[in-house]
Image (cartoon, rainbow, N blue to C red):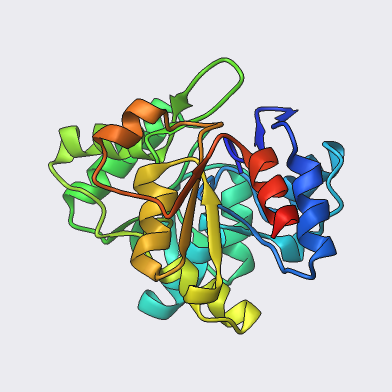
Length: 250
């Protein structure tokens, strides 16, 4: 959502009109975000505050995808979490427990409440070869003031300290999230379009999953980035206002 539908607390031009066009054409939509610092409820509150008529069925986060992945891979687990209280609530809602003393594995998300003590403890546990799972690997999160360090930056810090990278990164570009979305809407990935602003997550995710990859240049990616990248979206537009007009024209 950051960089595609809004930046910070500012809607991107044409955002609400885009939703109107999608709805008028009878299409389903889902806000699919790697940002695990908030839960679906917080995203819906923000979207409503910005004027979007949505509910929690319209939002799916990498935090939720991670909770489902952990259930499938490890069962209900005791976790040491580098993440926000909102991410903790999301994980616990799926039956996991956040455990400081004797966790079974380490989960890392976009932690806007991070402390040195939390990072240090995570590094100690990771050195003991506990399973290590990240919600996503975005390096920066767009903001009105400029890019802010995201989970990928924390991953890099931990790698420099421990020599380890996550055993699993659940969010985009992992096709796992697309499999969940496909099941929810009973649609093959080939019938789904992914609209996003990042080449290495959003567009890679769409391409690896077999979905249509639509890049907007309203967020992280610039035209120079696109020219240098081996990732080639199916469609590139300035922002979703342009995409709205294309949809209206058919």
